[in-house]
Amino acid sequence: MKTLPEWTDLRFFLELARSGTLSGASRRLEVEHTTVSRRIDRLEQQLGATLFDRSREGYELTEMGHAVLPHAEAMESAVLAAQGQLSGTEVAIRGVVRLGVPEALGVRFITPLLAQFLQDYPELSVDLLVQPRFANLASREADLGVTLDAPNTGRYMVTRLASFRLYVYGSPEYLARHAPIQKRSDLAGHDFVDYVQDRLASNELNFLDELGVNPRRRLCCTGMLAQAEAAAAGLGLMMAPPYMATDGRLVPVLQDEVFVERAYWLVAPVDLYRLPRVRAVWNLLRQFAESRASLFISNK
Image (tube, rainbow, N blue to C red; front, top):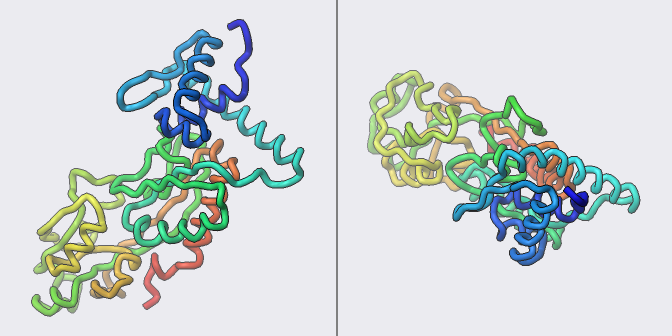
C-alpha cells in the first residue's frame, strides 16, 4: 500500500457496506452510482485487497472488507465528534435512515408518524422496510429496527420499545354465527387465523399454541395484515395487539382472561446509533411508544 486511504473513500466504503447496492449508497451519499464504484475501485487499489464480492444481487463484504469495517466505523465516529465539537452545535440531521419495522405496525402507525416527522427535517429521508420478517441488522439491511428478539451478541444499542399483549379478536359477524365464548376452553371449538408455521420470522410469533387449546387453523398467512383482513371477513378468530383492532372491525374476546405477552425491542448497531439522523428516528419511535401505550396493552 503506497498511500493511506482518504476518509472520503472510507465513507463510500461504509455506505456501500450498509446498503449493499451502488444505487443505495449513491442515494445516501447524494452522488452518481458511477462515483461510488470509482471510489471503491480506488480504495481497493490503495489497500491492495478486494473489499466486496460483486454479484447481480449487490455487494457483499469479503473477509478483508469485514476486517476494514470496524476501522472505518471508528473513523466515522471520530469525524462526527470533531464536527460537533468544532461547530459547537449538533451535527445536522440529514441523509437517509433505513428503518425496519413489523409490517402491520409500520403500515398503520409508523408511516403516518414519519410523514409528520419528516416535515420538520427537510434534509432527512427514510427508507421504511415493512415486511413480514424482521430486518437483518447484522448484515446492515437496516440502520435500526424494531424486533421481537433482542440480540445477545454483537455491538448494539438495545432498548425495550414496548411490552404488548396479544388478545383474541373476532368480527361481530363471526361471533354472532358461532357458539358463544364464555371461558377459555370454549375456544377449542372455533376456527383461527394464524401465521404460516414453517415461515415464522421469530419463535416469538408462535403464540396461538399458548392458548391452552388445540387451535383449528383455517387460514395461515405470513403477515398480520392479511390475518386481520381474514378475521374481519369472518373466517375465524385471531390473536393480535390492540393496534390491529382500532377500526372497529374486530372485537376482543375474554380480554381479561386470555392474552399472551411479548415485547418489541428497538435495536441499532452502536456505530450507527451515534449518527444524529439515526438517533432522531430512534427518539421518535421511543416517544411514540411511550405516548401511545394503549395501542400495545388495552386499557379498555
